[in-house]
Amino acid sequence: MLNKLFLYLKNLDWILFFAVLLLLSFSLVEIYSIALGQETLDLLNFKKQIIFIIGGISLMFFFAFLDYHLIKNFAKYLYIIGFLVLLGVLIFGATIRGTQGWIYLFGFGIQPVEFAKIILIITLAYFFSSKSLQIRPFKQLILSGAVSLTYIFLVLMQPDFGSSLILLSIWGVALFVTGFNKKYFIIMGLILVMVFGFSWGVFFKDYQKERVMTFLNPGADPLNEGYNISQAIIAVGAGRITGRGVGFGSQSQLKFLPEAQNDFIFAVISEELGFLGSSLVLVFFMIIYYRFLAHLKKINNDFGIYFILFSMGLIFIEMFINIGMNIGILPVIGISLPFLSYGGSVMLSHLILIGIIQSIIIRSKINY
Image 1 (cartoon, rainbow, N blue to C red):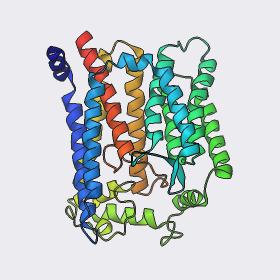
Image 2: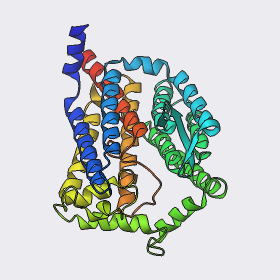
Image 3: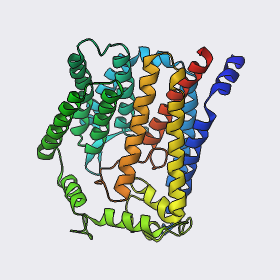
Image 4: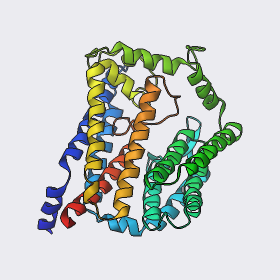
């Protein structure tokens, strides 16, 4: 048993691990900095983030040492569990900021959609690894779409347009990676337009519609709906090259920047650590993506390859949307920045994702 543990540790991708760890360090530094701006020094969120990170790293190692083939074999059951939980959220869930997407257990708030993203990746990786695209590709498009759209519909019912868009993006990445004909992307684009149009008329709350309109013209109402974007852009620009220093960002310290530790943590990093600090964050993300791709040639099964590529797509899209929100090129839709934003569910889910990828990497090295 001890020999096997050392073997797993030896074959762990430590470069990937430390790149993630450094992003987690950025998260703690900036959440601590934000706490300094409170009227009374309250480090509760900082302490909770430490707990989330410690718990997440523990889960990462657990899943890294767990044989990922077990996860693959239970893909169907995980999908059903995810479906039941998302359905349960609509019945028993708590509403926060207009979204009924939370379940409270033993005093802790859990956002199931963050874990549903992992389950959808597992399900689609299992589905496409067991099918041949040469046989009835349109049928596979319909089946994979049904699997994905079921989750998307349940999340739209909360309503959580941002997370439903991420789930849709996972399906889109899966279609792209598995080599579907371009005409199917036109079909998917039409589905996206229909989903958006239907959501606008049925699910979207007034504040969500206002966010989209604000994105199209953020300067029209800078003191109300355009306030978030305007303040984020100011914060990003104020950092210049080297930043104002940790604890000295006026936008975050003086509370001009709302949701500083969640949606707009990249703006806080840019203001306090400047272009150099924000660039370093991007470098760590690039290292993570590079390490994902570097291992693909050693993986001898489609499930492992698809899981890594779909996961890479998820992390990249969330990173792109969040940073886009912070610099004003995308609407504010409540997408967290992976490994950096405050929150238990999002932190745990992303570190579990890294753990499963590490499991794939470890076993590809042992069996290569």
